Image (cartoon, rainbow, N blue to C red; front, top):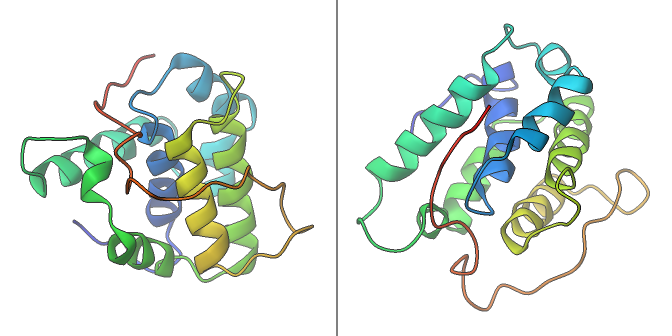
Length: 155
């Protein structure tokens, strides 16, 4: 998987993108809410770059995959830790988590895969309750198998 500079807009956007694809698809309501919140501006991205970040994340996950299972099957704890380690700035962490949660909730529910990524961010970034809205608690018995099966972006 490609790496981005520490605390870069691309590294931050990739965490949001991971939440977007973690339920198996990216719907227009997720991009709509991110657009309404000015996500690209808040993350420091050039306009219209977020869909490109989603696409490159999917490419990276497919390149590391084995053509079976879901894209999220290729995201283990080590990969999550590596991605989360690229963001150390507390304000940026809070922004990423806020935007990721807004996108995840755009369709009216928080899917298992979305919850897993949000929980990983909260754990790795050691954000405590009260700093950001809490995601529902869940366990990880099946290691992402209930999460994404495809990566489709729609406008």
